[in-house]
Image (cartoon, rainbow, N blue to C red; front, side):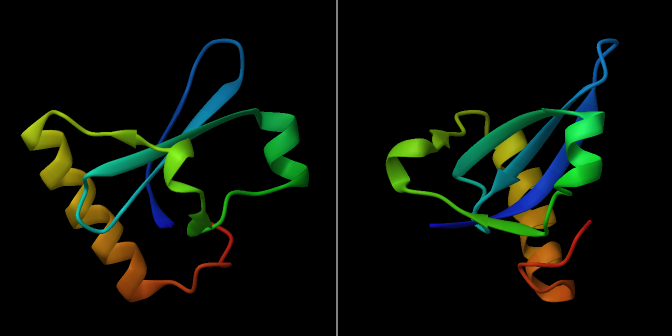
Length: 83
């Protein structure tokens, strides 16, 4: 299952949470990494995950926002683009 980068946030411990979503916004996968690790292994525009490894998005507003951003990323980036 292909998911596209839709959100990136970080906390005070320098941990970055990267959220990928399907283009319909229904499913997400979250990856956490330190800023240092991301400098060695940057986030890409898309990722491939097994359906069992992703979560369902219950909130309709969030699902719509994720769908819009995932679709935009899919239209403007190759899956392996570093972003």
